[in-house]
Length: 115
Length: 115
Image (cartoon, rainbow over the protein chains, first blue to last red):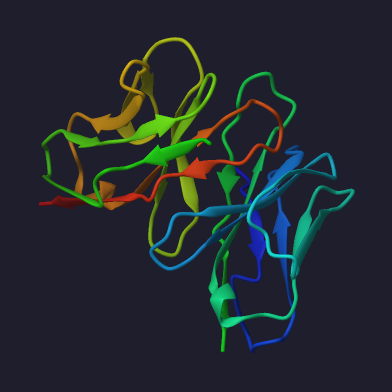
């Protein structure tokens, strides 16, 4: 079965640079979520989108922005990168319109390293 | 505020023995509870969920979990552990059924199954 696709898998940047992470949800999934997982940490929610509108917002820094496009893929844009932004960034997708809480299905993540 | 606690950083069991990974939650209203497993450098894989109904939930790979409302717990169990079950396990809760609602994760429990 098709899964959530994230690109790139690995990304190396320097401080103050910008980065764009991409997420392609499972076909027919209309909801995407972004999470950040630091080394040895649990995933922390950043932001989510349902039907191309922002749905929920977590601990996303003002330096970051995201959007969901008409084909439901999503991009996380990160500017003025800091050393502390080094982490694994996960995208997850789900069916948002179901009457029951649908599980979020995760991609394998983008490992961002800031030098 | 909603939260999840996994009181054990690590659980060690011998192959063939039963395993339990503990999780307690705090949320106002009805909880939507999930278990995920994470292998090194991979995304989180959905194991099972509790939404409503039978307190014993069966999931993937022979795992099950027992919802206990009075103890606000949702422990993950498996009757007979396999070495391949060794991984990082996360319990998660979401407070609502609305599309885009974030998952709140526990800190994770590392399961080590010895042969």
